[in-house]
Amino acid sequence: MRGTGQVSPGRPRPSKPPEGWSALAPGAESAAMALLVIGGLYWMLTIGTRDDYDTGYGGAPAAVGMLCMLVFAPPIVFVLGWLHSCLSTLPVVMLSNALGMRTRFPAPRWALPVLLLLSAAYAAPPAALGAPYVTTCCWIAAAGAIPAGVAVCARMRQWARARVRKGILIATAVAVPLTIVGGIVGYTTGLLPEYRPPALERADFVGEWTGDGTRLVLGEGGEVTAHGLPVEVWGRSDTDSCTGGGTWKAMDPTGRERAGVSLDVPDCGKAELKWSVAGTAQEPELFVLIGDPDGGELRILRKR
Image (tube, rainbow, N blue to C red):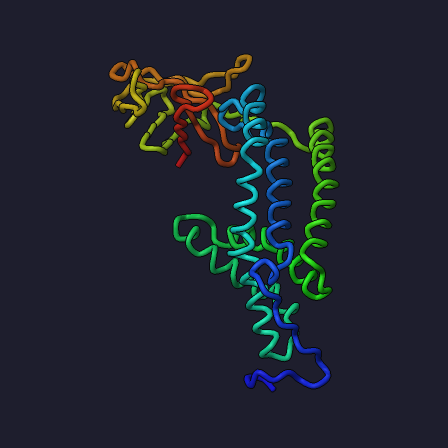
């Protein structure tokens, strides 16, 4: 009967959870680690398609990043996989089991609703900081779906932890080369095209651009009013700012240089006066990279 803790006749009583936290969700940490490995590999393979601001992700920086990933990734993946199982899969399994013992529905049927409710709760803090709530919730739920599914399936079939981990290891060994081949095919066929900045006309630059403490007002007649232009100061990690008025002109792309705007502000001769185009045609951006191309300070302006 519902609410009494009794189990309906004819329905098998949920088995008592085995001892040990990892036995409650067999293989959960291994499944989370496998997802991190595949996701990290995909990120490294496609990083060249996301160099929106010419920050130098290709070539030597990418090679150094890959080397660092190979050295430091194993312990990081282990810790993150363990944390994910503690914060996501383990609560899903425990709550599902508790609901299965107290309702008409067996525990496995509660896994998905519990995962969605837990994801909704975890998405609230990022949303309070400005992240899109629905998107964040979906990403959290997607990251927890496979580990939770593996744990629930293992408990239903009473698989040992060693068997679950062995299966995940085999699946990962197959998925890694498939991911590499998929990345190569994506590049060669154009399914993973490199980022291309939007082609803006001169009229598209006219207007107000703001962001990161800087404000540019580009007039149709070539006049500009600048507030908070960044000024790099040699020997210091921070930057100064400058305010003034002057003129601007559109720059066409030349070789490896992007299109953008060039400012002539007499009162700010040492400021960053060349801003390049980024973003999309629907949401264009102007940016400047101050200092080291591989680790400098990035300033981004968006049109209002």
